[in-house]
Image (tube, rainbow, N blue to C red; front, top):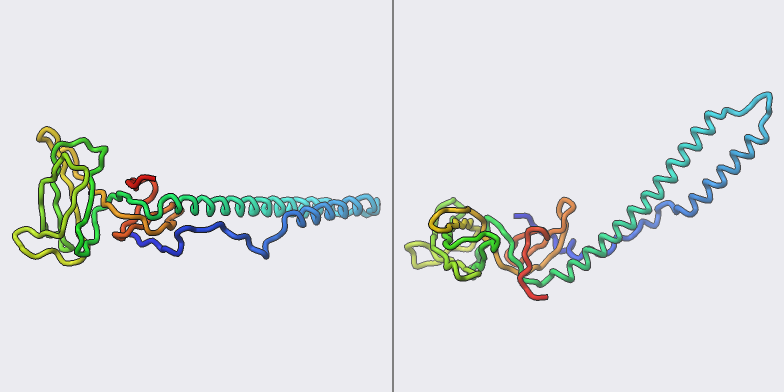
Length: 222
């Protein structure tokens, strides 16, 4: 599971670097350069003309640099817009109840709530829980009429509960007696942080799971 840095959560607007080149001032320098170049060409000695190739190269370099400055300015604007978008998304998701699909989940003594992906049509589901040693510690058939299920740390053939740690969940789904899928449980929790990972927005939850906007289902009403 990937950790989310809460400090990177709401990601305010990206500030501009005060030492950056001022595009408007650069444009004035470019115009001055053209005026100087024109004056030099007009006043050159006809018997000893200036090297036009050098002037063309200087002009091309200056023009290329001007375009780069404009591009950087545009990128700063885009970064600022992305920061604003992150803040809007944070306000919409933070504190909301969500379902995040995962193979593993942390158990800390409280029941772990989960759902089966609602897009998978089934009439029978079997839960298998494994410990960190990949040993099966619990199996049960889930009630197909219920949307939400939970595991309270029960261990097969033992009166004691499981110790705190990371456990693996597997759901085997059936329809009309035939297996149709082996899938991950979708664990229920609340969003506590918002960050970025490889350029994607990532939501962090109370049960230490992470998910992006495409794979996380919001369950709470707006």
